[in-house]
Image 1 (cartoon, rainbow, N blue to C red):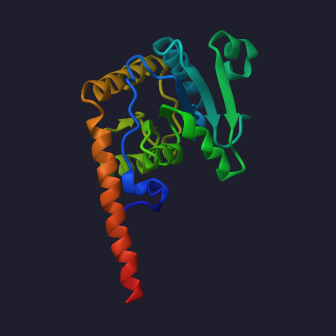
Image 2: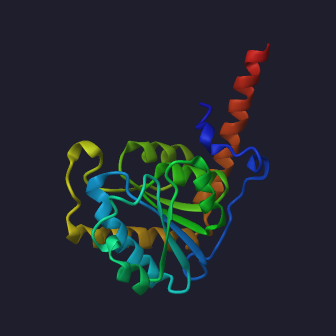
Length: 209
């Protein structure tokens, strides 16, 4: 009934709106958050390569929330970073690291908290769901879900590599859909966040009486 407190950035909540970019071509700064589950770590590299090809002029950074130790074979190769002109940021150890998302036009990736942080500031954010947490956020705000099959840590299975193309197409189709519909889902999400905030404020103020 009151939403998630992390949705509410008190500095912007009153006038929260979508920070629009023409995501078919005009994105200049992309942040890609890493996978939380070990079985999905390998997916970060092909996702980064795909986005580099889709947005050849954009600044692209890979953001690691829990350190870069388990980042996958491709991402341990310095030539990979040079070839695809990718940056890297380790934000483990401090919530202040989330400020890296403030300057990005588009967040896309696996971290639920990066998704919520971006939404709270009106950023376009595409979450690739690893479990039900992200599903719940998106369903509450009216945002389309992109889910990994099979979902969840309990499965312990790696997504077959042939299915990576299916996932990348789903991401592409969704980005194009958002642009074609002038980000209506995210306009509605901002409206829903403001609505939930008012309900939450009324609820909290009720304790004062």
